[in-house]
Image (cartoon, rainbow, N blue to C red):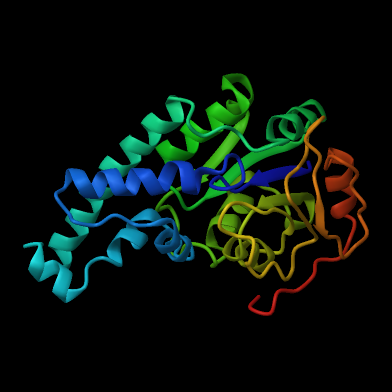
Length: 263
């Protein structure tokens, strides 16, 4: 059965700038930390897979000492878990409040895939509650219930490692040759291609300058009526029009998998 696997952040919704960044900053303020990441700061942080991993970059010896934070590994692990739990709750509140609209074309392509009997999944390194909240907001309860969700700390290595995609394929019982991925970042493309998956990229807020080597198609979005997609790279001449359709994704699966240099 052909299967469509989505990343979450930047794919289902443009979550980073309007969701994760303010959630991180509100968390820091609530914990009494004099840290407020700017848009420029966060453009660098998104290159790191995982929220706790991004927060961990604060824990330099100088910052730990200045803020009276634990210096031992166990204490820091517990601290990061507490920060991240609160950050996830704030982020989920933002999603529930409608602050993060779904990206163009997401609900349309999911409806097409569901009607055609394709499998549906999300594979993300974000926390599972965050992913499920975005998914429901993006496609609605009925369609969200048809998704398998692979998220959070369920694999040893986060993107750009392929672990989350390999786990998804294994648990779904789907061959890589039968699955198409929608990603938005260079790290995501490196992960999906290393897992043997053909990938369409919908460029998002912080990823315009990323390396998408290995992607089968790069577009501005999936497109909707009145909101056309712009083709950025189409190495296999898939030739989508104003909207990337399920037929385009099926055609993508007939092409050989391009190799990423790090695969």
